[in-house]
Image 1 (cartoon, rainbow, N blue to C red):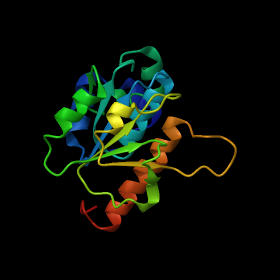
Image 2 (cartoon, rainbow, N blue to C red):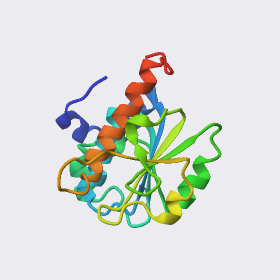
Image 3 (cartoon, rainbow, N blue to C red):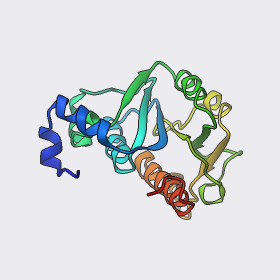
Image 4 (cartoon, one colour):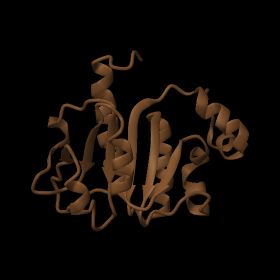
Length: 184
């Protein structure tokens, strides 16, 4: 089933539950740490739906639905994508580590990061994205299996967190589907 933006916005909560449960999801989890821009958060719901992610964790300073800007930017996807609020990203990560074989990947610029194209993504997987200016906290980076970054060729130091997320997540999904991990 695919719905246009008007249909998604008008989808009742009960119908959204039915639609959500009917989806075959990739074992991909998205952890947002202190992402402050509510339009970015809404965009993450759209991205999570686009890749059929399992769940989003909104942590720390993140606003949560039904914040009107998240509702607007998500185009109704906040009703489709499972999500949960946690006080800290570390709390979400502790929960996620209970998943057998889970790999933890932060998308962040650091002295330990590698080019996102050089990592061999394995699933299930959790991606961590941080604050628009400050990035992922050092204490959270210490919990990761790997830190990946997108190369920057111009003067600007970084991309918008949503843009970086879209590139990294689609790359990981593409790599996994090439390996036929999900039978899609």
